Image (tube, rainbow, N blue to C red; front, side, top):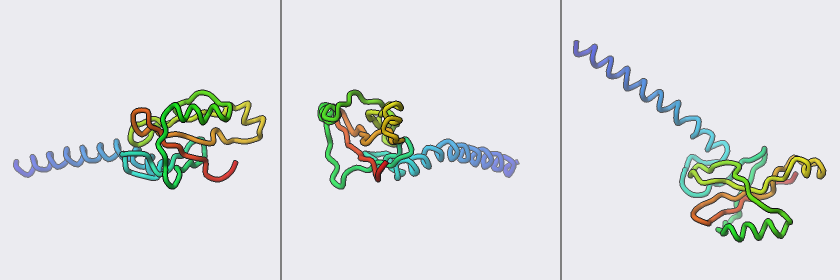
Length: 132
């Protein structure tokens, strides 16, 4: 009787571990592939978006939303769209180039810069790696 109970307990324990692994593993591996990290704190080392890779500067500077808007305004752009969520749970935002503009310039680049929100009114910019 005792061995039977032990087997049942071990079966349930192993089932719980298996379910936990399959529930967590997809997110963990996606974080590694898309952001280059398992870490869920702070800004990731890279961002994959729209088939392209974006990296922060060697010495990333935190910007306010007003500074990000001023940067976009200098290029004649307006508005940000959330395109993903960082491992930390914070939004990743950018000004997405409309399809008709991409067609006009014969490019498949969706944007040149993405920003990861790192705190209240704090954003770190990531630039496109490589060329169009």
